[in-house]
Length: 223
Image (cartoon, rainbow, N blue to C red):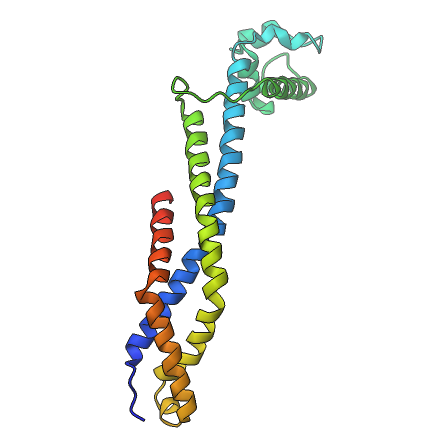
């Protein structure tokens, strides 16, 4: 029986199908990625908002819960707000004349406590008037996640309906890409390989490939 399938064409069909399957499987990876982006951008927003609150709190407030810290010494060293103290390293604070290592450690702990309390007051407010980079990052990541979630059902349906059959058809049609193996294969094996190849070819020429292409275009747009 003459070989009716061009081995190069058969190899290309196999590559195309494996590409589509890889793209469909990527949807769940993107979904998890954008979920993390939403979490990260929200945490960054809260951090920035809380640090802004600390910037309004004078350094003298450090002594409200921990007496004995030399506030004037801190002022003279250029620390005017709790935010200034929070941004400074423990080593930087300990290097100030009059501030011990223990005092520096206490200051860092107190500023961390201030920050934690400030974060508890954060309420996410997104509007056209709130267009800072942190709010914009949240809006973008939420949009990307929403679009990816919309793709998930389609990708799941395509994988569930076609993946197993495609993988089996690829395996059955591989004989057509081999030289002597094809020559010495039985008529039944060759006929089965031809049917598998035709199945794969028809999928690429039909609605399956178009649906995969739609998913791929959205992923490309979101990336």
